[in-house]
Length: 126
Image 1 (tube, helix red, strand yellow):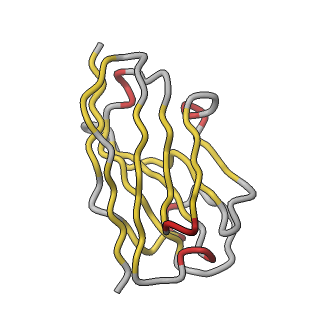
Image 2: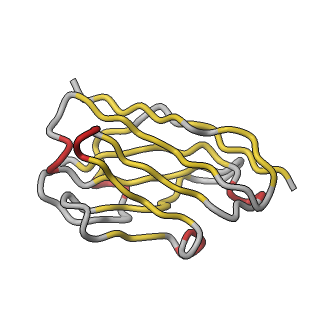
């Protein structure tokens, strides 16, 4: 069965960095597009970053551009989110997600993601 497990969250001061990891199992990871979403306190879940099946194209939420980088390592069945220059508003539970189809392009639409991890907490203090 498909499983996505996030790790790497924690409590950091504003301006610091964190690298989130997501390890996938139960499917052919190398041909699935992946994404990162987050849910801030008292807010709805929102798209953060996406990467297509081949890793050649990426997509970012405006607030993440220039600060966050999504990447993947198919040999390790992993997708990562490098977060630099963290701000208090980045505080959220971050979720790794895999799209339903194969050979798909990056997408910010949560509806195309059928598999989700349990989430990892990121807390940024001011």
